[in-house]
Image 1: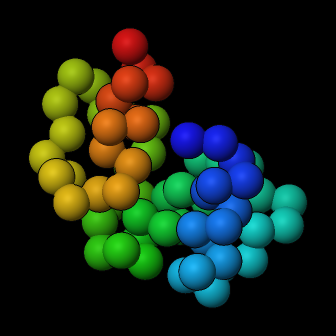
Image 2: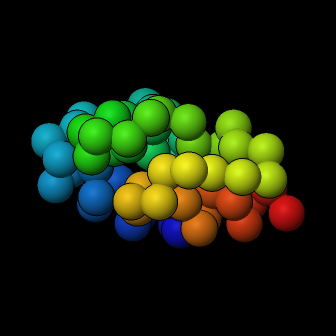
Length: 62
């Protein structure tokens, strides 16, 4: 997912985006959607099936 896509999604959740990294924004979105703010920390397994970033997170580890 590109940074512009993450920023647009963050704005829909009323999250301020200025000066924040992609990972920081994604973690804030994860909290807003009711999931753990764990983007980028999964090691081969993730049980957050409803997370919007699950596939992106796991694929970045590969």
